Image: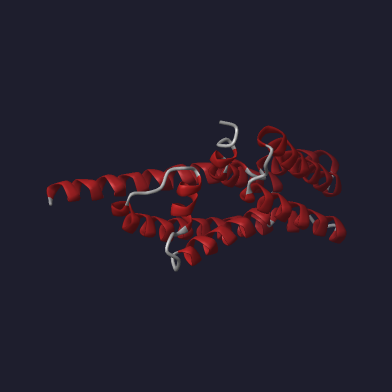
Length: 194
C-alpha cells in the first residue's frame, strides 16, 4: 500500500507543487522586501521536497522539477537582487509542460497516457484518439497559462501575480476541465447514436 502512495502524486505535484513557496514569498516580500521574500520562498521549496520525501519516501519527478526550477531561479533572483526570476518559475514550468505534452504526441504513448499508466490506470484502446486530442488541447491550455504568467510576472503586482499562480490557475483549470468533460460527453452521445 505504501508503494502506491508515491504513484498518486504526479497530478497533485503538478498543480500544487511550488504553491507554498509562492505564498511564502508573497507574504514575506510584502512585509520585509524582495530579498527576505526570496529566502522564505527558497526555504519553503526545500521544505516541500522534504515533506514529500518524509511522507512517501520519494520525491516525484514533477515536484523535483518544479522545486529545482524554483530554487534555481530563486538563487538567480538573490544574485541579481531582482525577484522577477523567481516570479518566472510558474511560466517556465507551464511552458515546459506544454512543450512536453506536444512532444509526447510523437511517441507511442503520450504524456497523459503515460501518467495514467504510472498511476495504475492504463487507458483502453478506444480512448486513445480522444487522449491525443486532449494532450494537444491541454498543451495549448498550459501554453496560454505560461503566457499569462509571464505577463503577470513582469506587469502585475506581486499579490496579483501570486493570486494568479495560486487560485487563478485552479479556476482556469476547473473551467477548462469542465469544457473537456462536456466535449467528452458530447462525443459519447454521438457514439451511442451511431
